[in-house]
Length: 210
Image (tube, rainbow, N blue to C red; front, side, top):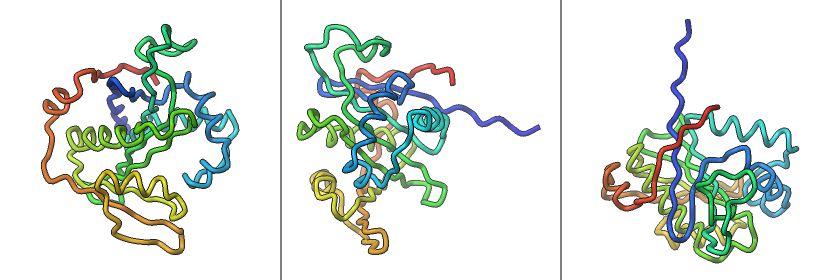
């Protein structure tokens, strides 16, 4: 009998600026709407999906042990109640984008690929992506011992290039055939899980039934 694959743990995190929540089925309609935007599709190297295909995508991402996807929510104190059908812990937050951490089998054990997208236009230029990347790298470092983070960016995506350069990423290779530049950030001091939890006090594990 084949050994069953252990389900990865799920978490959510909230700060005074943003929330990071697992990609749940309740979030699909808004996310799917973002991913119909031609500019977002081009800059993320994505293909447009039907709503049914996006539902399949969402479930596969949750089950994928080589990937962590969080939906970025912007803190909004004017929202007194959570959006319809959204979990209680999203109260006073609204959807803004997503961030991904990939543990590809073809890269080194200490490495992870990272990408970020702010799909909600009203949430752009507020520093959400920068903060989310910082948190996600701390998460990858503390919980998975990753200390080299790689961002693969379309050469035309100057906003993303500027974002990662501002965070201290350095370009280490240019792939002309894919019109991509690859940036890296290397941690010089590792975080423990305890240090991460002390830094981000509103961080919790979730029980999800897939």
